[in-house]
Image 1: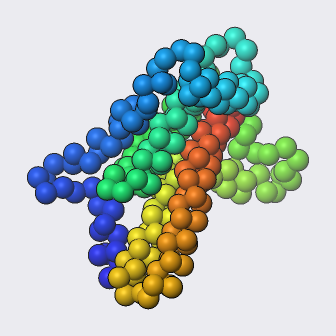
Image 2 (image 1 turned 60 degrees about the vertical axis):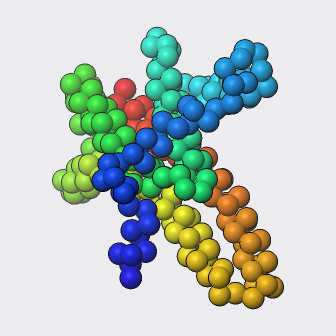
Length: 224
């Protein structure tokens, strides 16, 4: 039963070719033409969002000399948010609900941060393994705990995004499949519930993309 339930989210097509993974790039295609016209309301709105994210990421990164560092995380936020929103449309494949995409985003980021930190700031990285004020007797245990928590970071980033995206889709799918066996009154109630769930999923799409980007920024700031 569970296998059949989750099989609706499998990246498979009738031609045995994963054309549905192309939905990852559909965000650029569905942008209205007004977005590319400067100035326009849509462009101004997105510039305000980007500027707000830039200011927040700049404070977290605390980097003044390296200009454009926040562009990486703003682009990451944009890509994840576009894909999350695309998954809310009918018959569009949700690529961010699969670990193959989320882990492909989280693992290279975390690995590059770790390599940069251990090569350039080795003493700083070693000091992070033992929090300040730790008793000498607990230091070996704290090193093990901090090392494990550091290693599982890409996994938690990837699983958090994928689980949150697939949970809402799964709930909407389960509720939608019961529509054919309901009365008119219950069907109206189901439609209202689905609309409320859709609004909730829209909020989750923004929040999860923001959480992924902000946590990546925090992990980056720790190695500097």
